[in-house]
Length: 510
Image (cartoon, rainbow, N blue to C red):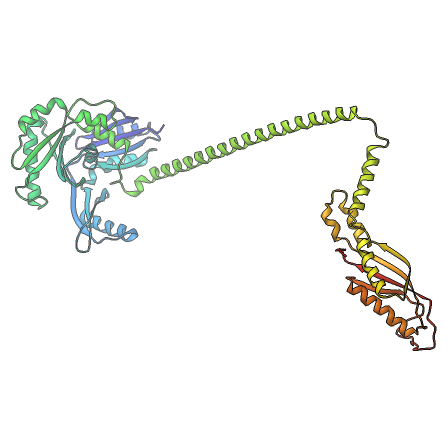
């Protein structure tokens, strides 16, 4: 767990407060001299890796209220840097607090510029912190943290919050919940009790605000005093309401408990509560130079990387767990299927054992079944083709059919063999057929060679009309070629035989 420490700095020196989950433990104190600086440096050598937040409670503070043109991005950063350098020249401990935009005109942005105007008071301590192996979270002030003590309370638009610290009486003006001004009144060591000084210091602050025109004259200013319940009676006696002030008292112990401090101080000193807030969360407004917070930003980047890695690891583990669960479920299903298959195989074997033996082996029967399936896949046989051929022969009575051979093409037989018995019956209509006819031409008068060729062509043309996709002559009773001369008459062609080849499409519908 990261060790956190708040360093409370005032004019008397520096005090350390260690923070552990809401518990505060007082650390060593150091005086602002060479002996104190040396002791602080030696103590830092034993605090490697500790996160330090410097909480300053100094009189030397500057607050400047201005309106600036509303810009964003790098232009805004450059404008704020130039303004801070003009207002607080020589101090690196500066910051700008946005108070919102104006409602009229150009709607400029209202800004409160604040700084610790005496950097020499911080530098000796910061030099030791920079040289040590520690993490500087940031630099804040009690004025910036007072607002957190009033959070979640319903307050008026303008209030003056008063509390006591180890240095003196801290007075902070808030407008619409935003810091507007703060003042520290140092109490003398042997002076009157702080409860008797509250009214006097509030009056001085009121006069200053009226002089600065931050407050209209004769305006009633609500004042909230943060003190231990045991001192409320003394405060009521010392601070009575009048036409300028209306006082309200808050229990410091109750505020400490509501803000997570597990061990209240039981005193009106708010230093412990402010140190708790500083160690827990330094706040968004930082007075520390950017170079001093480099180690803290690097630590934040490491934490973010570790968080992303942890989330990725958790997601990977969840995915792996889901995959493992799915794998086990699949293995269980596979085991159940395997057991079911074994049980079915056993039942099948028992059933086979009760049946009479077949006259042939199972392999032979399976081969016969495959052959039958192939035959069944050859379609509807030669019937449709023979019907078409018969129609043609009917229209040509001079043809005397001698022989007819019907077959399937070789490529169709190969396709059937490849398809196997698993081929579906709807593939059968895709199979074509081939018929080879041998016929004799019987004519009443002898036919010449030319008349024979014309008669054969007429037969082939009729075959095509009947749906043949191919009709050709295989053999004629005489030599027929382009280099031969056909004789017109005088040649007896009666009783001649011709051979024809006819192919029908796969759709053998007659």
